[in-house]
Amino acid sequence: MASNGCVKCMSRIPYATLIATIMCCVGVAVFCGTMYKGVTLTLHMSETFFYHKYFWLGDLQLLFVILGSFMGALGLFLLLVGFLATGSTREKVYKGWKSRLGGRISCIILMVVTYFLNLAWLVILACLIVMTIVFTLFYVSCNKRIKTCIHLEMFDFLYSNTTKVEHMKLCEVGQIKQFCRDYVEPAEVMYVLATVACILVVISLVHYLMCLAANYTHIKEHHKYLDFQEIQFLQEAEFGTLPKERF
Image (cartoon, rainbow, N blue to C red; front, side, top):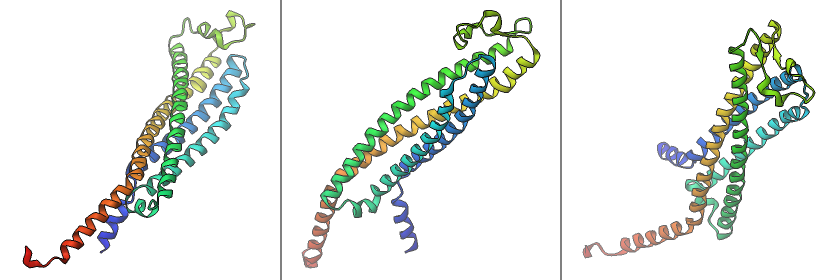
């Protein structure tokens, strides 16, 4: 009896949605943490070496906190929908046509939201790839010094229009150490990890879309399954009432 109860309990777990939720939560957590640190380093570096203050970068840090909270709440809600549409729980929740209609509408809305979120994360991924390439070029510049100086003329778009060319290079040992070891190297690691985490989130959102499509089909076709069970039960009851001498 205990084993049967355990089997029934395990059959109610939406494993596909659970895997997607774990991937999403891990990806968002790593993304928010690494991007918060990466943006902080980028902000300090731009103020120190490029003589710019990007105030909107500070707002990004608050945006990461909001994004992490929203994605976490969405992941838990999608997991709840998965539980409601799995196993014997579905049979209890979606008995009537109204409940089935509500379940199908909720799946459609969530699929639309998840689809547009996936597009947004793809845009974020593209931006992260650009940032990773830029900091990789910074790292290459640190390793390929010309006469002990780091030339940043190729990044003149990061400077203000009034900055002279001779100010676009770093020659002092203290400046080079601060630029390379304190800013470029740790920031590059942060952006690489954030890119990997973003890819994980995109994969989890695609996984969510597949799960929602499957849940929509399960809810839609659930009444047919119930009708089939009822017919099967009536047939078994009918055969059970027949006299055994006939067989």
